[in-house]
Image 1 (spheres, rainbow, N blue to C red):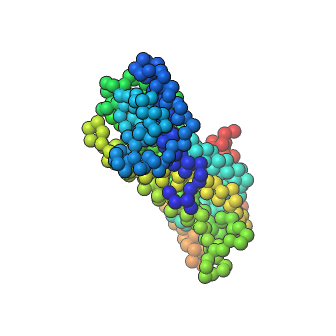
Image 2 (cartoon, rainbow, N blue to C red):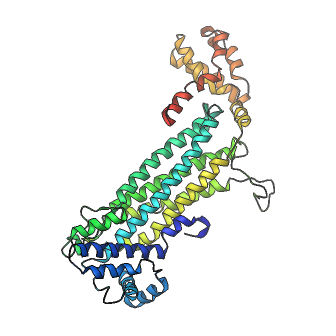
Image 3 (cartoon, helix red, strand yellow):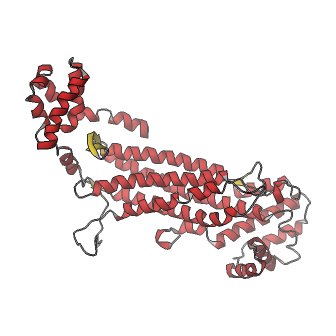
Length: 434
């Protein structure tokens, strides 16, 4: 992933240096377990740990791989250069390359998941704070992009909180599912390596043994992991789209913070564009782009092939780095987002009183008018407001069919804004707890 959309902690997980360090730890812990079982001499296992402080030379490993055409063999050759060829002769005993590659990949994914979980927790804190801040800030709710009925800005933030809270649960579940390791040897039968070696390595790396692994860890686990990243990315876009709509000039109910010295357009100095949330929409597309290849990786030939390998070398770092950046960016947007309550009220009253139509409809039916007649009576007055920008309440008061069923006081009462916010506390208790 390009530096522009990267943060250092997530990038570090996917660096060659980190990868080779994990490979080394897998091999060293495996040697310890094999020494405990009497498979290899204890001194040889201890000799491997002489490299525990070594910074593996990525360029040297690449140089060896240019000859061997095999990355794991290149690494093992380089490890022997540090440990000594005689001392290292039992390294990788009974193991196959996938034992190292797959176990390492899952270590990297679990570490990436830990960062993403922390990102989600930070975003949830920001959403909760803004929800409480604007719990009673009334704005118009929209369906199909059209004014519907009043809601509050706090409820908007609260529903995004609830969605991201579900995503936090999904991310924790995805981490648990991907946190498996396999040291089972060729075709996964443990013919040349004791299952207790796998148990020891997994324990040391914070994983659990894969119940059955052929020669690779099953890729349905990875498909579920990347699908989770895709769902989180879609939720990011869901929030970004709402903010982008709110910042439109003719709406302007909310906006991204515009910093001192920031420029919106190279041509038009007046512009304040929602560049961060537009960027988030694009980043969400890139994260979701990893989902289908991850799904297609599930179907491998027999006990293994490497059709998944090139895919995972790209989507592993790219999807996690991008999502990490996007979550941090969204948190910043929410933290600094500008809210304009006066514009919210002005927008709601653009067609005076019109958004109270359902209350009048229900009142007419309760007064004995059939639903069909009540709907017709309300709609004909609502259309006048649409067409002439008149006041909906005044139109109703001038309609003899309406006033035959409802008194002026009863009509007036149907325009109480508090009616629509009376259950906000109940919803907040459901979302955030009592």
